[in-house]
Image (cartoon, rainbow, N blue to C red):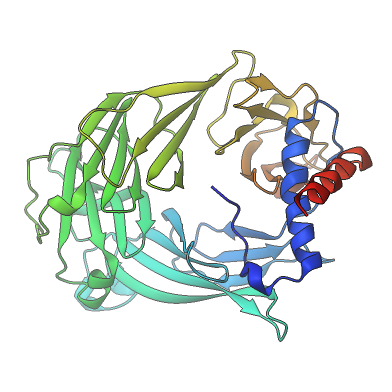
Length: 415
């Protein structure tokens, strides 16, 4: 699971390659160090998604980090959910981002033909802007798809995007006010964009409650629902247009195992033909490893990679990575949970806030453990009870001199 650069390695100078290597190694040394590390602000691209679907980005390497509009507001009503698909094969930074909008009448947005649709999908492509020296200086977005989910869909709380496929959990309208059937659909969004009124899709499973889904390469999808982890080969499921009639059958998964009974979104990493799913739940971090290219019918085992009853993970304040979990715990303290050493960092990083009180604070954590960058976001109220949002960037890749010297020694051994 090597780090991904925003431009090809061949376009880097020797000095730039050295800086990249030192940063990756310094992050590993910093995370594994038992010494206190003073937080330093750094980073690069930070996306901010508003309720209207507007997206702004911040270049945290700039002297003055200001919000730059990437995607304009797309709806007067709230965006239900969004998801990102990174193009790992593109030479420069590139990804698609999908949104689901909830609207009372889609006809007001596009055309009278779509009246009655309550949920709309929009997909944007985001690419890097290059200067004359082929360095990345910004981002640009282009809308590439638009389609309704269908008049029968009342909500879409979960999306997963991979290539031309979009997996969605859809609440289906029902005559019963107390129960809405929940279906897992897989849509080829390119076909849906070309024929938005009549496009085929696959119905994988009828779910009893909200679940989490992750599309995998080679036509697989992982579904978690209340402690059940199921792997499907969705290419074996026929496509059809089931509107307004919905199939009542569910297809058999390749395997189904029990795991943490938490429906938090999980992290998925790939190495060769194997997928590694990391799940953080309260005081546990678990790993599920399996072959997604040619999976056997024998279910894999769920292994606990970290356990610490003194550190309670919070859903929005936890980053679950391939090497370690970073948790934003009480008193706005960052804890590094390293899997290999099975120990918690002895000296946590404390975020000191200015201008935000402890009144109704909601904390979010975004991180990349390859380069050692963490972004902590706080929504709260100041002393005058005025709502505000601020973020703190902590960079573990910029170290005290003694750790930086260790990185230089590692580099010298590689030359």
